[in-house]
Image 1 (cartoon, rainbow, N blue to C red):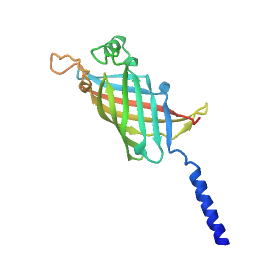
Image 2 (cartoon, helix red, strand yellow; image 1 turned 45 degrees about the vertical axis):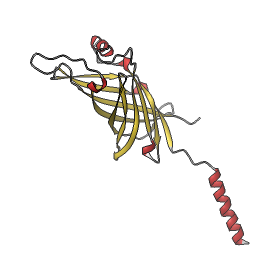
Image 3 (cartoon, one colour; image 1 turned 60 degrees about the horizontal axis):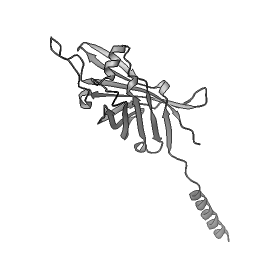
Image 4 (cartoon, rainbow, N blue to C red; image 1 turned 180 degrees about the vertical axis):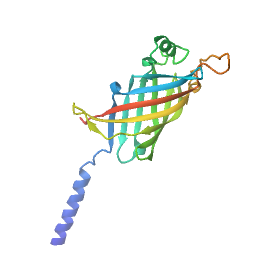
Length: 203
């Protein structure tokens, strides 16, 4: 009798555990555009550095707490928000000479692979689309930070990502030669993304 009760109890426990769904491993995060910027820098006249940023950064990060490789990143940048602090230069960057914003209003990044390098450091490979051209790039990521609660009860985390791209690969080819040799604008563009996200609460 005792063995029968034990078997029944064990069977009931197994059935109950299978009937209750396990908690989801993936956490969805929404990029906060008000506290996120994609910065860039290029060499000007081969001697100085010109910096700018895009503020219209939106998207989502789906973070798999149990298997990082299953995580995904999907980011969209409003190309028209380019800002270098000089209106005439910004207008030129929006023109067909550079970003051609009228025909390509968005810059996008979609991850294809995420791997941890060390504590607090990751490499995120993905497809970056600029001016309608898509190329594979790798972001060097630090973070995410520890989660905090803001004054409004939202859970927030942040991370930083950097990479370097050759603008020629994306058809951003305008340039001019200097009299003493060299070019007005460097081909390589250094990119830094300071990203803050809020946790999507389950409905």
